[in-house]
Image (tube, rainbow, N blue to C red):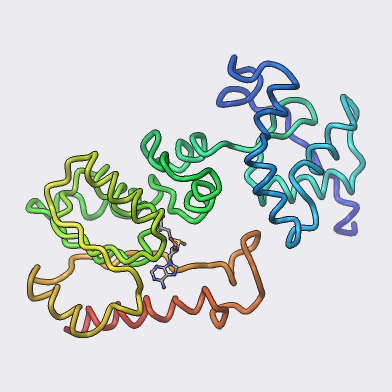
Length: 269
Ligand SMILES: C[S@@+](CC[C@H](N)C(=O)[O-])C[C@H]1O[C@@H](n2cnc3c(N)ncnc32)[C@H](O)[C@@H]1O
């Protein structure tokens, strides 16, 4: 069977969170409103790389009403749904998740990214760790640092790693957070203050500013780092998020080598 001939099934509508069975979205107009101006504005700005706007995806499926869409439409729609994290909002209806819903699914506290513009919320959440997955991996640390942990957090974003450690009940003694985006830095700082963290949050704006001298100074000040954690930008690597196919040589993704440089540095001191 050719790839294009494969039988594709569009799932039945999800029930529950933010979909029509939920009283907050009850009519077609509301579903359209949910797809929303801000989302459409943002997704239209991506038309250049996708060749298919969010509004078009919606029209593609909705014009079939209760009927089964053509196989090529189903294939395209399923790809776009995966790419844009769309959800089934009814029979042949799709809607985007709003930032509050994304926060919920990613395991962040409610309103974690509030206070910055919608586009930046989507960008920051789209780049972030999934908190519970990170917490699962970090579970082995629980109980090992009764006096708190010293963290070198590279590419901290909106603090997926910090939120995960906090959720595990691990005291954040010293966190050196290296993050370029002002919006993301504001979010992490706000979370730090709102959760009454007693430790020190030290902000550094660029991984390139993490020099031997600075690492040595932090390590002598704190007595070493217990963990180096982070996810470097994957724009040139990751499927739907790919700007180009340059891989680790790509302008964004080559920052991975800074991660590796800094990790080697910490291990060698
Ligand atoms: C894949 S995201 C990591 C997000 C983070 N793990 C989280 O939970 O939110 C990569 C992050 O690297 C940041 N970044 C890009 N260039 C940077 C640089 N030169 N120095 C520090 N951070 C940078 C981006 O702003 C982005 O937040």
